Amino acid sequence: MAALIANHALNPAGGGPALEVVALGKSYAGQAVVAGIDFAVPTGTCFGLLGPNGAGKTTTLRCCLGLTIPDSGTIRLAGRAVPADAGAARARVGVVPQFDNLDPDFTAHENLTVYGRYFGIGEAAMRARIPELLDFAGLTGKEHAPIQSLSGGMKRRLTLARALVNDPDIVFLDEPTTGLDPQARHLIWDRLKRLIALGKTLILTTHFMDEAERLCDRLAILDHGRLIAEGAPRELIRRHIEPQVVEVFGEAVANWAQTHEQLGERMEMAGDTAFFYCRDAAPLLAVLAGETALRFVHRAASLEDVFLKLTGRDLRD
Amino acid sequence: MRRNLLALPRPGMHWLPVWRRNFLVWRKLAIPSILGNLADPLIYMFGLGYGLGGMLPAVQGVDYVRFLAAGIIVASTMNAATFEALYSAFSRMHVQKTWEAILNTPLSLDHVVTGELVWAASKSLLAGGAILLVVGCLGLASWPLAAWIVPVVFLTGLAFAALGLIVCALAPSYDFFMYYFTLFITPMLLVSGVFFPTEQLPAALQAAAFWLPLAHAIQLARPLLLGQVPDAIGLHLAALTIMAGVSFCIAVALTRRRLLA
Image 1 (cartoon, rainbow over the protein chains, first blue to last red):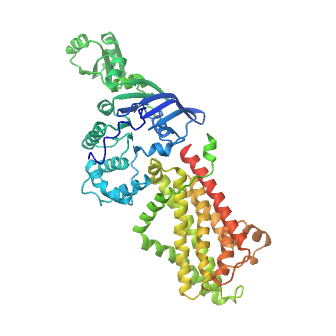
Image 2 (image 1 turned 45 degrees about the vertical axis):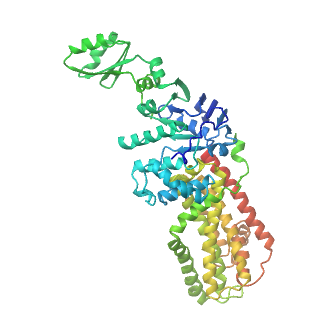
């Protein structure tokens, strides 16, 4: 493994950040999809871009890769100006797209060989590294399997292996575990942690807050094309939300919650559940102990609470 | 920023891996693909050439089947390039998202479109070349001059691939391609001199044919197949080259607008 996916990612951008985005803006038909955002991803860290559907995540990623030409702002990726020098920047980058776009006409081996050619990697070099790539993806023995015969999780892992053919310093992952079962998701997480341990820079978008919390050193929450919060997961929770959450559900909970609103710092109704956000949940729990018609869950505040507080509970699409 | 979308194509040589990707897919299905490319045009050539030809006097001084053969060669070249640049390229661009995967590598969209252009022209070369071979085996070709049809076929393929890639860049779905066939390809087949000499047509249509790539391809291929040096070689080559070049620039600009805007 060490020889192939080498730990030489420590200094890809000549000491600068792996990715630096300044005042990025992009509009479609007069509608600002990305409305002036700034962020930087230090080399060797994992950065998460969160946001509801339509928040501008995919447009931001496309701009960073030089695939969408922004209206304004500057981007430096792997030390190169994008989009002007995007090809050279992408030579140091791997991408796991949101939807698998493996070549359905090829086997796993052929997919990797052909993809290596796009990076100028010769046949012999590819042949030498494919076993290791497949091993990393947990696909040993599947070299000659047609793509159609692979499960969703296997395809995702092969897509991850494909993103590593050029031994990139920076890996972009657009919703890497959407649509996967828990086993497959944990396997992907394990591999991403290995990449982080090797010093790679990871930039991912996700809708799964546990995924973001687990993997990311820093997060940015994007909504309506703007960055509305940025920081380490724990820090975001500390900064934006009360530490304890009590979810109360049961019949007539809405009325009960209205009359007991003062027991939490904040209360929100969503469907037939009342969310109480508390600094100290003890008084609320004491009252709930006497309410036989209500059920409740008491837990620590999570990133999801922050996300919902900042972006609201309304559906986006 | 719009200027970027309209800039001239910068193909470089990095289109080659794109071409090789398509070649590898094709290699897996080569035999049925070649047979498919051969069957349809040969049915027309034998059916019309001997069937209809048997009832006709000599056309432009030769048997009808010899007259028709050159037309069938360039028409099947056109069809092969057009199908590849329309249906197959559209699948790779829109359905399979193959282009999207390639664009995540150092390659640019210009490389991808160039790779598709040369690939479609290569496939059409194979289609046209295969017919030429059959025609030759039947003793309907005059060698060695007929061999010059090979580059003519490739240039014709480039022109139709470039035109097809324009349509591909504009297509919302596969259904859209029907318009291109019924409004452009089929009429062109009839006014360019594939089945009968253009002199049979009203003057206005003869003039229109001057602007059609297929007509120029036939003006080159037909005499070559009969062992004659074509008239106005420079004009026909220039017409095909300019049509291919201009169409390619338009196709690249439209594809950039579609995928990179």
